[in-house]
Image (cartoon, rainbow, N blue to C red):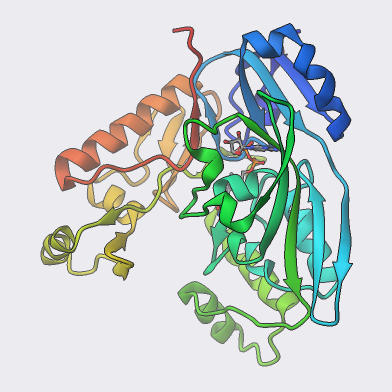
Amino acid sequence: MFESLKKYNSFHIDSIAKYFVTIENEQDLVPLQNNDSLVKSKKFILGGGANILFVDDFDGMILHSQINDLSIIEETSDYAIVQAGSGCKWDDLVEFALSNNLYGIENLISIPGSVGAAPVQNIGAYGVEQQDSFYSLDAFDLDTFKKTTFSKADCKFGYRDSFFKAPENNNKYFITQVRYKLSKREQLNCDYKDVKEAISKKGIKNLNAKILSQVISEIRNSKLPNLNEIGCAGSFFKNPFVSAEKAEELKSIYNDIPIYKNGDSYKTSAAYLIEKCGLKAYREGDAGVYDRHSLILINYGKASGRELFNLSKKVQNIVMEKIGIALECEAIIVESDKK
Ligand SMILES: Cc1cc2nc3c(=O)[nH]c(=O)nc-3n(C[C@H](O)[C@H](O)[C@H](O)COP(=O)(O)OP(=O)(O)OC[C@H]3O[C@@H](n4cnc5c(N)ncnc54)[C@H](O)[C@@H]3O)c2cc1C
């Protein structure tokens, strides 16, 4: 019954789950309503494990989607609706869209993880979020075992946030299918500074979505750790929002701080703040802050989930003490009740 989660999380933490159930289609969920272990124990819905930190062993049931279908279910001359099973790799969906000349998610190329997690996390990169093309999703309520279709409004998307992350909804809805409405017209979004610079540096004249996605992939490869060599969960912290007053204070102390107005508040860079606290490339044993991007915590090899968790707390405490900003985790922290 006990299963090592090492190959199911990108930090490569060798945490053990008490129960592990793979869901290959919606029908696999139905008998679970009579499963005592599910009803009585704690549960966690796991995709590709690319944004998770297992702090210790998981004394409950892991439900892992392997619903892998992918197809166009509706089409007009302007757009197509693509439906993907929650267990599909997100990147396979992006490649499928590009190979069918469907546009809207090309900037989200090479983001690790599954389709099922994309709306939960409202993944985003290089000026685009999945919510920009999101159409609807189906999810099973694990308390009632009823299937519900959620519209974009139902999902309440925010910055790396959604309805599914609210504490009362967390691990309650098992997402089975996600649909995206993709355009047949290429409308490229290359406003992001790094993207603009790379395009101009390469002297690209006839830009299209495929070339843009390659450029973005290259930028990502140059900045992010190779998961085959180093464990990480992408950005460990969210970029913080601060008040106008705090923004002024920060600008007066750090004249090169990246900070911009976002709605009623100001958004700044967590990586910048971490570096200003002297934590760039900081390391404790095999747990460290990545030297090429301070928002990323890495496992050099043998760090335990607890050691990485302690490092994350240390980073949060130091940023709070020195700069007065509370860094919120983007990565999902999975702590067992057992201490
Ligand atoms: C190298 C690297 C780079 C990254 N770059 C980016 C980036 O550019 N932008 C970005 O936004 N993120 C990025 N991430 C984070 C990560 O890729 C995303 O958060 C991704 O969506 C995680 O997918 P997953 O399937 O691995 O989800 P998991 O980590 O397994 O789970 C994430 C959350 O989704 C929930 N979940 C998963 N599947 C389901 C389901 N079927 N039903 C209900 N809930 C579910 C889980 O319970 C959990 O709460 C990066 C991560 C890494 C390691």
